Image (cartoon, helix red, strand yellow):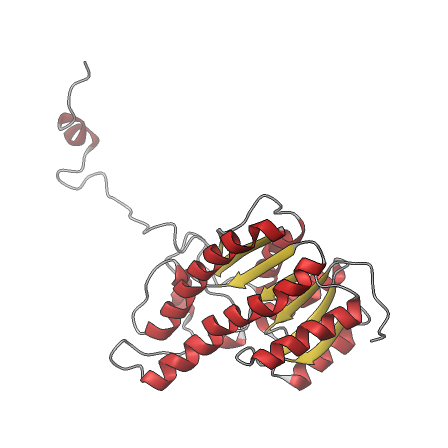
Length: 267
């Protein structure tokens, strides 16, 4: 990677070495973006940057560390001349109910998933102001839209991201910085490799999503969604649309005529 600034839109992607982050890095680079991959997985990040060529580079980024964030943003500005966006995507998963999740595990998940996003926003805003505006996309989850048993810390972190997104969107609007959250459902990634296939069986689209399907949404948010801020974008196969309830018309009391009989007469 040379140090000469490029004229394309420049984005920092956290958790960019694998899964949704890697798919988004690849799609953005193919679409003309400059991308700095931020991740703690150096080998995977460096391989991906080398594969994708001059529009991408890798830097080690621990999202829980303020100095690491400052260094990553400075690297992006040095390599690309400016920073136009942040895909705040790094996150971890931990199982456990409210009573089973140990306090230190709860704190660790919030530190990575929620505090890491807060630190990223704070670190990138000065660069976005210098660029006269930009976009921050925060990865939440459908676990930030509804509760799940045995995921106490994860659900808490993802709801927190949703609220932080709205607060940041209001705080940063005057700087022409849009802030939105994405809410993936079950997606085929290393994080979900041990999930049973039946997790998605009851959805209107009864399958796991692919990382590229989330990446296309992220690209849209960076390049097209110019009138959207402080809001949620859901990529979940319909998982949060509601329960699928199939009624048998012959069941007693469920015939159309019996339902109609209970309705008030029109006047």
